[in-house]
Amino acid sequence: MKYIGIDIGSTCTKTVVLEDTNEILLQFVQPTGWSSVDTAKAIEKALWEHQIDVSKEYCVATGYGRVAVPFANKAVTEITCHGKGALWLQKSSSLNIIDIGGQDTKVICMESGSVRDFIMNDKCSAGTGRFLEVMANILAVTPDELCRMAAFGGDISISSMCTVFAESEVISLIGQGETKETIAHAVVESIVQKVASQTSRLDLSSAPIFLTGGLCDVSYIVDALSHVLHAKVVSSQNGRYAGAIGAALCAADLKKKEGNL
Image 1 (cartoon, one colour):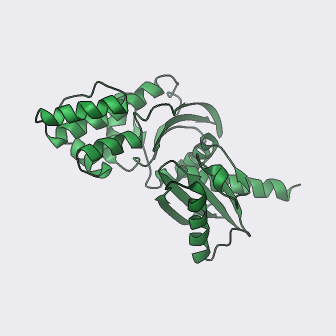
Image 2 (spheres, helix red, strand yellow; image 1 turned 90 degrees about the vertical axis):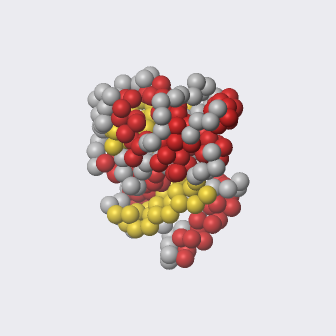
Image 3 (cartoon, one colour; image 1 turned 30 degrees about the horizontal axis):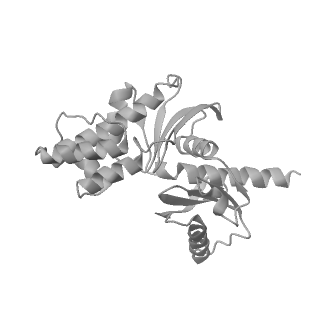
C-alpha cells in the first residue's frame, strides 16, 4: 500500500509517497504559487505520471493550503504532521523540532510520540524564509548564496526585528560600504536570534533538537543555532519533507483506523 502526504506551505509544496510507511518511494518539491488549488492539480498530474492513482491510495494534506486538496482523505494540522515526520526521520519518540518555514517558524516539543508543547510565530515574517528571501533580493543573491556568504562576514548586527525596518537597515549598511558577506552574516544572525527568542519560552532540555524546513540543509544555520542555543542542533537531508512525511504517516493511520471499523 502507498500513502501520500502533501504539505502545501506558503512558498513551497512538498509531496511524499511512502511504501508501507517504512520507505520513501517518491518525493518532490515545487513552488506553491498563488493558487493552492492549481498546486493540488499539478501534484495529482505528477503522481499520475509515476503510476500513482490518488483515487486508489490514502492521502493526507497539511500546511496552510491543506483544505485545497480535493483528493485528500483528510486534512491534518502542521504541528501534528511535522512532529510525526521528524520523529520518523530521526527514528526517535522524543524530539524538539524547530521548523523555519516560508512565513512562520514553529517550535514543537515531542515526547513519547505525542506533542507536549509548541509555539508558532505566524504574525511577523522575521526569523522566517520570507525574511531571508527579502534580504537576499536586496543583496542581489539567492537565499542559499546569502547563507554561504554569511560564514565569511564580519561582526555587525541588524537591530530591527521587523522585516520592513530591517530592509531599510540593510540598505543603509550597503550605503555605508559594508560588504555583502558582513551584511549576510548580520541577516543570518538576526534569524537565529529570533528563533532563539521563540525557543526560550519552551523547555528543550529533555530531548535532542532537530531542524526542519527549507533551511535545514544549510550547515551555517545549523551551526549558528547550535551556538546560540548552547545545544547541538541536528538535521537531515530530508528535513524539509518532515511535514509531508508526517502527513503520509497520518494517511497510514487513517487506513488502519478505517480498516478496523
